[in-house]
Image (cartoon, rainbow, N blue to C red; front, side, top):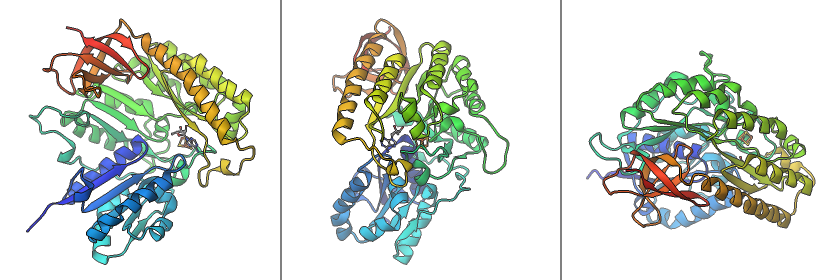
Amino acid sequence: MNTVRKSYIETFGCQMNERDSEIMGQLLNNADYSPTNDIQQADIIVINTCSIREKAEQKVYSLLGRLRKLKEKNPALIISVAGCVAQQEGERLQARMPLVDIVLGPQHIYRLPELVSKATLKGMPQIAVDLSPSFEIPRYVPPSPLMFRQKDERPVSPDHFKKFVTIMQGCNNFCTYCVVPYTRGRETSRDPDDIITEIMALAEHGVKEITLLGQNVNSYGKPLNNGRQHTSFSKLLRKVAAIDSIKRIRFTTSHPKDLSHDLIECFAEIEKLCPHFHLPVQSGSNHILKRMNRGYTAEEYLAKVDTLHNVRPDIVLTTDIIVGFPGETDKDFQATMDLLKTVRYHGVFSFKYSDRPQAKAVAFSEKIADEVKSERLSCLQDSQNKISLQRNREYEGSIQLVMIEGLSKNGDGQWSGRTMGNIIVNFEGPSTLSIGQEVAVIIKEGLLHSLRGALVL
Ligand code: 5AD
Ligand code: SF4
């Protein structure tokens, strides 16, 4: 009897990881594994991990502990750990958790089927974690049918019309708090022709929204490993915009120091480029920014934000902030609070500083007590919540173009979608609407994390 083998993938962390998991799913699908959401049914389990902030390793180890029973029941089950924790822990992970068959770092995800065959044939654990300074993202993995609806079907989830496309990976910046350069290696940009081929294939399958991904997405293009022609990020954006059926283009994550005038101009000129910019500032204090090795001052950052606001007044800005970085004084923290009031972000992701293996700041003196970090975090979040609510209230009475993602999570039968600026809108509308459709919605109420409205008839 030929039973279909099943794959189960669990993803932690960022959008890069979500895309990597999708690629591993595609590759397993091409190797005759079909995806399942039921871990009990799985013949292969992949845990795609993130180690950007603390407790990541413990989370993975405790999840693996819970898989022990499954492995005892089914010794042929292949358990793989991918991603940044895999890269960081390497052989140590397998030694501590012998039930793990495959450990693969972010540069090795494309080798998953080969590693699965080796683990199965040899019955030996496979560890693939060497980091190559000249790594190149493989040319192109054709999308597998499981990623899409059939041509004549209606989309049933946002997965059917919005996709991530990795355009670069790795990081050369070495911010002193950050583990990424050690887990994802050096920056490498994908060939622009490969990116366009991939997006055209997605467009053919009905995809309307593309998010270009990279650790440092706006430093795309320098340098292309294979020596081929340099394409700047703004040129790439223009090429993507030229694909007719792609209606919305987003990108993440950007580094303020690489925010060029060229890119700012794209926001004025490319209609499909969504007016949402996630621009992590991390701190408002020049003393801390320097210790973080961020490569810009608060004044330089604010000048770029000003230009962005001038070019695209409707731009939605979001950011990341770390509180309690070693040496952060009350005055430094106040500078961050002041910056938040000046920029008036729509949303902020804020974190307490934590030591990460290999990152330089581990060795920095003047570590901040956890109570102080917690106090600063809640002070910052209280103040930002007020700003976010005000920002969302400013939409009341306006008409927004919303791309429908499904029924609202509130279970009240309303539709839910996103504005061009990426803000969630729940709205009343007839059941004849469908996922992926773009509709005009009048905003009636701005809430902290979303907007409420009604379809414009
Ligand atoms: N401690 C706390 N936050 C961190 N981040 C990255 N490294 C750390 C760390 N060691 C945050 C940064 C980054 C976001 C993805 O995670 O704000 O932009
Ligand atoms: Fe980490 Fe800094 Fe690179 Fe972002 S730019 S991935 S924070 S080292």
